[in-house]
Image: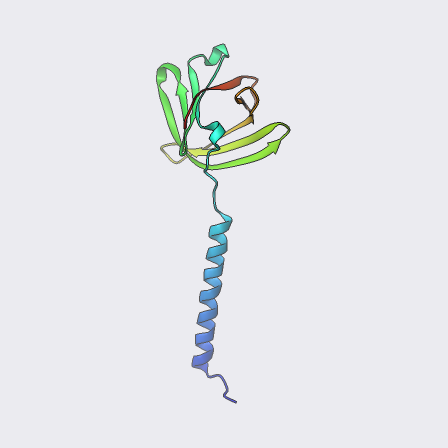
Length: 135
């Protein structure tokens, strides 16, 4: 029986460290995967009949949220992550997006598929309806 030498033990140690490091990196990469797939029913432009927002809109495409700001134009933000939770007859969404300075923002709302789809923003009673499809 051959007794492991210091060189053999060193080699085994290096291989173990490499395998452990690769496993940690793989687990971290898969664990941090972000969902940025905007559901098809949300794609397009949304408006509300609320007088305070008559000249405003929301728009969703596969990569961006665009906020229509009336006379100030519109601003688009890159979507970084989307969380969703099924609730009652619809889905609660939270969109995480960043501005041009990489500052993170969130948009949370409830989507109900009835009546060709409705969006109700958190902390608001205003109902947003799709005016055109983004498909």
